[in-house]
Length: 214
View 1 (cartoon, rainbow, N blue to C red):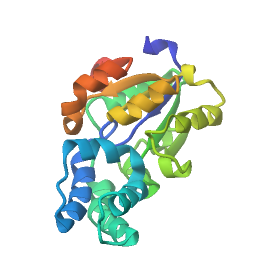
View 2: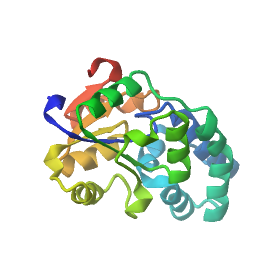
View 3: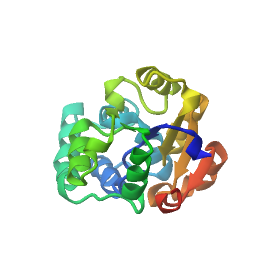
View 4: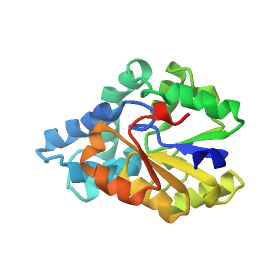
């Protein structure tokens, strides 16, 4: 089925790279300081929001006393060194991207993480130049849980949503991209294993690894 498509969008954290433990921990740091429990459901809710969206959610919904600026600085101070040096590609990702590039496919990224995290990690793993576009949700001022962001990206790519494959590990983002009309592939990640049944029900396809896609 995937061989019929030529335009692909990939989530970043938990999809292309094994970074969710770091992403979750940078949120835990804030919540622990405030004495707030970080549950699986909360992680599911905030993952598509982007760092600014998460900070605003913490402030406005959970009542975190820190300023938004303080929260963003805490996130960056902890996570950025890991994105610069330590976070690596998931199994099979590099070979699959090379395979798609050789076929002449358009490869793109849409991440909730900011460019300061995405770009440096892609470059450290030697795949930045493989992508036609590297977007974060902040570029569109929308969360990845909003179907409109996928319609905007479809327009940017000059194609219809039905012609695009979207890979993601978060059920909120998969649900939104499915509603927008994209062909969706749910990607296994340990951080979202509790939602694997939900993801399988929403997505058109579910994979545990990229290794078997070629």
